[in-house]
Image (cartoon, rainbow, N blue to C red; front, side):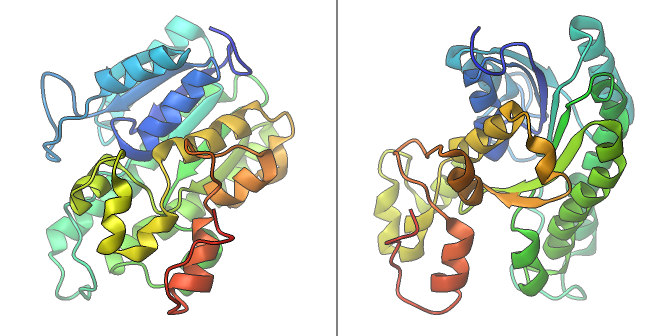
Length: 304
């Protein structure tokens, strides 16, 4: 392995697909050893019932130039998370990067449905999967991360603090979950900063995840065919884009300047100079405010 992160150990919690997978692969491309976790394995699928697995992600990490290690973990199970951290400590003796990307809520929320009409069990399950998992993982993993100065915690969410402050996000439960993750990064920044580590929140833009591509009936190869149905999809980005943001942060000796902040893949591309796989730099959150939410026709000129 070689690269700016060749001596680093990362844990990407929730790396089966989407932003977690893209992040794990880019950390691997930078040379890191990456533990990737999730509930979907080649032996057993989660309730998502999708084909992506943690083993697939680990193999992609290794193929990219790192060392991928797949571990099946339900991050609501605190004993399983403790066992995972103990394993990392035994095998590596360190943890340099923790990415809390656990979500699991795609099938649990209803769009534009008020809280009193929403399925309560689904809403509470969403909060457990999206918030409690992050708290459990941080509780268990941070003592190992703090063994060495310079550790980085990335709380992956949907939306920047500025955007989510002023925008109703989907419904009560979804909005609360994403706001909670933003606040967790802020709180962790206060607790980790004086101890030599950095915590921050990071959001991708409109993500061309496996599930999003399926929803539009396209693949990464022909994703632009979806523009006939949703022209604003032109601002979308691959999961590798936010992964490159994490890799850049992890390699930055001055990353502490972002402690407690809310960041985006598009914003960090302007700071670090990385691009998406197609060489563009989509700036989705600026586009959403200035074009889509403003009711203007789709036009990504100047935004990617």
